Length: 401
Image 1 (cartoon, rainbow, N blue to C red):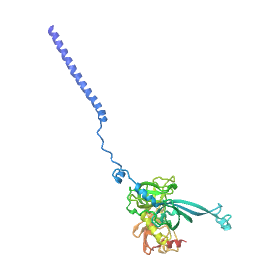
Image 2: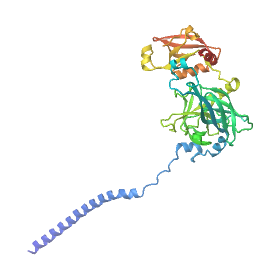
Image 3: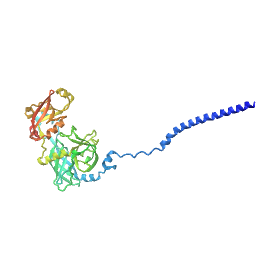
Image 4: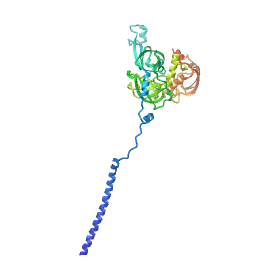
């Protein structure tokens, strides 16, 4: 009996010990899982220090990590930028029938029904390019039928100016004031501009004189914008608004690299797409205006060309839309005598391929006066070369009249 009791006690003790071991292992497993869940919050609460954030690339490239400082450049450049006020005489009519040929046949320019002179004021900006008073601005700022031009200098003096020359093709005009010792903006080389480079736009937007805005060069060599006939624009996101026309586009060295000309906008105000005539083009135009009072460009005669669409390309037998479609020409010209006809597609000029009418216009304008140009055209899908003399654009203008 005693032996049976001892065996029972031993078995109970062994069972208890086994139960403790099993329970202990289960607790260890539970603890290890709990620890796995709790380790993550502990690690998140004490993360390793992240590497120092790199400064924006634009700031680094400008001044080694600091924001760009344009104070010195702007302070000097604004001294060479002026306000332009142009008073124009615009002919209008009091009668809605004035444009009717039947009405004009009977009444002509009778003062009762005829035209009236109305004065229109154009406001813009200009850049002083010589100490003896030459000022460059946009052609559209000066306008047509100018009766009076006032140039307000940075020192608040308002001086009557005169027009030296105008070039509608590039939208550049040259003015002069009889003043000596003016602060000027030095010319820069726009051909060296890089996309992403900092530039300043200086002018008088909304008549707020000496306004400076900053941005970058968005693109160079922009064409087919629709602002001028001869297009080779600098595109920038520096804020340009109405009144900035004719103002300065300045690089980081304070040099004049462009003449602010126009914007693309659905609202009429700044939307980050502005255009400036590059300095290398503006300077060439101004040199001609100073020497001759006009810009002497090459011309092959009076000719109207259009952009080639898919539909027109199919109609004239062109393989693609590259080229310039001749839409209108005159019979009594060298063009017609040489064999060109409306419907021909100009695809080459002096060995260079033509992509669009704007490029064709530039190549013709830059051709040497007195030389002979080779124009390649497509007619019904077949290529042919035509030799044409390059004459002065002023000669072509007289032919059109």
